[in-house]
Image 1 (cartoon, rainbow, N blue to C red):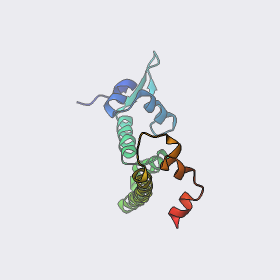
Image 2: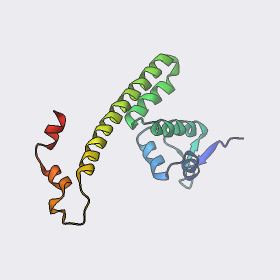
Image 3: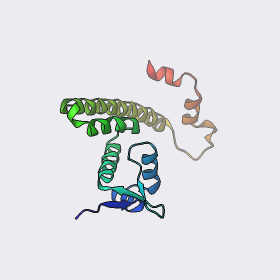
Length: 145
């Protein structure tokens, strides 16, 4: 049997986030403002719990808060959107992530090149090839050519 309402700490724990994150999501409009008890405790409905799970899961797969708001709009207005639209939106995110991966691979290779040319010896760092290369104003210009 599901609960009708969750206190903030209970819901945060179930969702695997901090109470601060839940408050932040509420302040950003990703989760509706909680009802308050007479003693001021926040109470979240099952509907808001489901919405929070949606937000947390979307964040875990890489969507930004702005993108999550867009996804929530699709979720809330399902009858006005198609599955094709949702798939297209996730496809755009996949392409964005692929670009980031390629950029990170380039950074990794540049760092590996720096690492590989360093002798790693016990002498003073004043002759360290990594430090000299990083201060070279033309280093990245040559890397891009």
